[in-house]
Amino acid sequence: QVQLVESGGGLVQPGGSLRLSCTASGSISRISAMGWYRQAPGKQRELVGIIFSGGSTNYADSVKNRFTVSRDNAKNTVYLQMNSLNPEDTAVYYCKLSRVPVLGPIREYWGQGTQVTVSS
Image (spheres, rainbow, N blue to C red):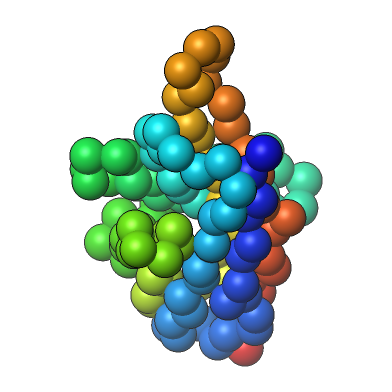
């Protein structure tokens, strides 16, 4: 089993920055990717940014050049640095880990979510 613990959310003014962290524990071998998703009230959950095992990244168009996903393998932690935040970034942010077991399909695990509110 895999456990994901997120931290770093909160209230920030427009134009400000926040850094989210997500630390994984448990059966965390054979990770294929870790990423961040968000869900605003009344909207579907959407990809924000993802980092693959080889180090490549992918971002939603709405956050390119503002958000950066990175990881610290020694700490089993993935980060989301968010700059130039605007009210449209307000959402619950979720961490997701994907791993490929020796047998069977890819397995996905989610964190509990952390609230990010951008408001003056």
